[in-house]
Image 1 (cartoon, rainbow, N blue to C red):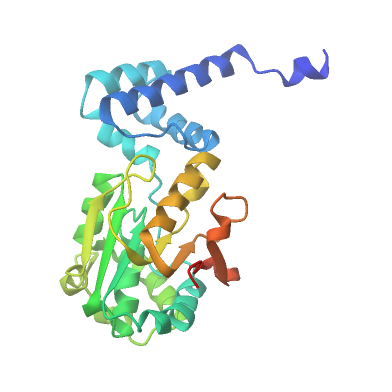
Image 2 (image 1 turned 90 degrees about the vertical axis):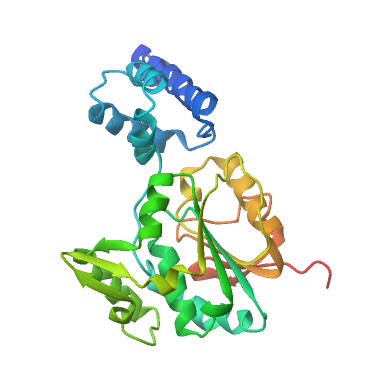
Length: 286
């Protein structure tokens, strides 16, 4: 067998790729959710898990159910979107925000912040708490967006298992906390409900980085651990949206494994805190 033969794609692999493309196209055509530019390897892993969940042998069977049973797609969406987060995740990121970005945000009479890909809301509440501790929440509007409406509903409820609170508390402390995290939630019956006063400055909304446009001018965009699931073209589209949304000298925060280095929008930003993936929009008018 030649090297070319050994590395060639098998008929089964080829069939899976065809079925994958047809399924993603079907989702786009019927439900208007666009996963066509998502990273293929990540989609494959998630859809293989979905096959087991829906008791389907092939993606074609899953597609048939998807097209003829409207109750399937909301459940499938939980597999297609990543919902792994925690409050004050990567505490050094929030510490860098406190030390470097917050002093500059204080200079604005009012603030708008966009948390893109907010999932079930842990990062949004982290921002609300940080801003309250820094005396800025009352003059801030936080846009929390995601394509998964089920996740948005859970985010809007602001309720999390008490089993997670110890980790949240440790992250909060390491982020430079000025108060105890327990000041912001009430625990009962195994659940922790975060204070409704935190939510009054948050707008939860369905928004797709793949198909939707900019909806507001903001001073800060935080989109962490989302771009890693996009291919290069979709990463560039998302970063273009962030650049368009940000005001002059606005701030952009990305995940620890994400970078602007190879993006066509790289020149629009300067490193602010490189280790924590914090950037500032260049002021070309200066």
